[in-house]
Image (tube, rainbow, N blue to C red; front, side):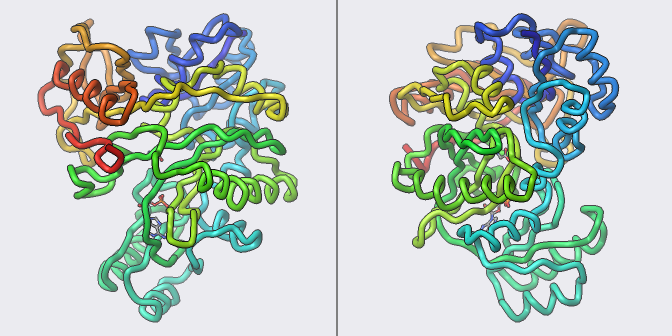
Length: 417
Ligand code: AMP
Ligand code: GLY
């Protein structure tokens, strides 16, 4: 089978790497891909916002399956348009992707189905939102309603911060002005991934990422500076709880609404004293969590993703290596703000050690030289018998790679090691 993978980040390199090992695969095309993905597939310069062009490409290249990596094409309805054109694809429809695209949509599903989540209200008027936060007090959490690339959430420890966050939203930074205001939850955060075919849910595994820029989980939020899997805090009992009380009721609710959820569902959880509570859903694999899921996966990824599209997940099981995977993101100077691009990357050809895999994120090739070309540049991933071993292997590889202005956190995995 020929497969087209949409995306160009570290997540997509990890997916491409796993897909390329499938016995079902004939050719893998990546649109637009990155230099790492070019080693396991063929990069194609397709404008993925032009759905007609994607459909045309599929016809011309006998594509049997399209795997959508990032959220933007899902929210833009790429899966809907491919399905209408008779092309099988992995990922939710535009409607179902609202689980990620709209905080309000997800909160309403939680409220209507008794799914544990922070108490909340939705607002479309600034004065009402201000009155609510003043009445509720800090700490309190403000969430712009819509895709904001992970930057639409303010955990306000003071009332002044909460008010400033609301004013920002109504200044139009996130397009249409509406928001969710919710109670602050205390606990450890963990991510839980499942596949859904609309009816059946197949639990995958767990992970934890480090969102803050600085060591010790300090500084501004980022897309993720590193991750590890499995998450030791997600005991089998907590995982079962999250599956039965959070994920399954969500999948049932969407099916009942006539919009079955197909694809990977990524639940961001807070493990509170009262059990797991939903912080957010993502309608796609995590980045950089996928870079630690794929090296642990023993089953065939393509078979699993096809079963999600075909509605046959009830016949599937999934096997994982009994090891920990840990990834460290190497970033460009300036990340998560404006970054310096263009530095040549050195050391990737050296011996990086056993069980190490480097996934490319923001890289490019210029005049035959690999350069840093984005905020998160490389994801250096290692497997180990423990978090400590995976951590030691990953950092030993990190120390052999360099580019001008490159930096990383030195403590990925600290909570678990
Ligand atoms: P989200 O985009 O909804 O995942 O929020 C981004 C981050 O904000 C989460 O990973 C949490 O660290 C934090 N956060 C979100 N909602 C809450 C909440 N209700 N209580 C405490 N922290 C939260
Ligand atoms: N690492 C967080 C995310 O993928 O949303």
